[in-house]
Image (tube, rainbow, N blue to C red; front, side):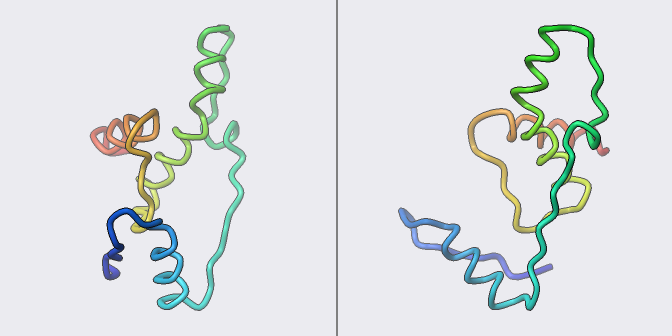
Length: 93
């Protein structure tokens, strides 16, 4: 497991994370995920469709973080991402 990055309180922690990634890795890849295909959601309920459209980004991001054991990923402290992360973590998907 890699070394945990530290940052000064009150400063942009992403600045330190990107510096750490550049120092420790020679290649950084980004992947695009087709969220609808990945989550395989097909609903015929208007309320479910609205809820899905509003939260699918957070659900896919959290699910991928759990499945890939992402070390440097962090959920947002407020909102759907945090709740979804702990839901998947407790379900052991």
